[in-house]
Image (cartoon, rainbow, N blue to C red):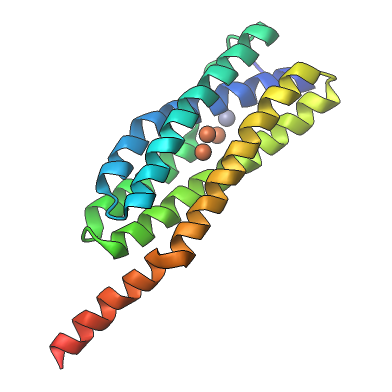
Length: 172
Ligand code: ZN
Ligand code: FE
Ligand code: FE
Ligand code: FE
């Protein structure tokens, strides 16, 4: 069935986000296991808990909207596939941590864009309660992104460089 109006467009976006969060709930444990840095591991595990709650919020929104749309978020599929590629191609350690942060931030930025748009559309439709629920998640995604930046710039990136320096000096 074709989408004909703005509210149906919002319904589609909520279904897409549900798919995105569901895929992430499956992917995050693997990323947490693969991470070497304790704070990165914790960030992934904490965001997994948050993500499960975000999915609950979306279910609540669907009930509120009497929305039963289902779809697959192809973007999240691709972003997670890139993350898995890193797991396969990068040796475990600080360099992999840096790669995992890059993959995770791509995910957070996608979510920030998608929740931002959905929130804006809900606002236009006058759906105040739904706006509030989307806003809560949007804040969490923003915080997750900022925390990843902090982990990268406070030590992981430097440690990844140190790995490279150590490798270069043994070759000499
Ligand atoms: Zn879609
Ligand atoms: Fe999320
Ligand atoms: Fe999507
Ligand atoms: Fe997220």
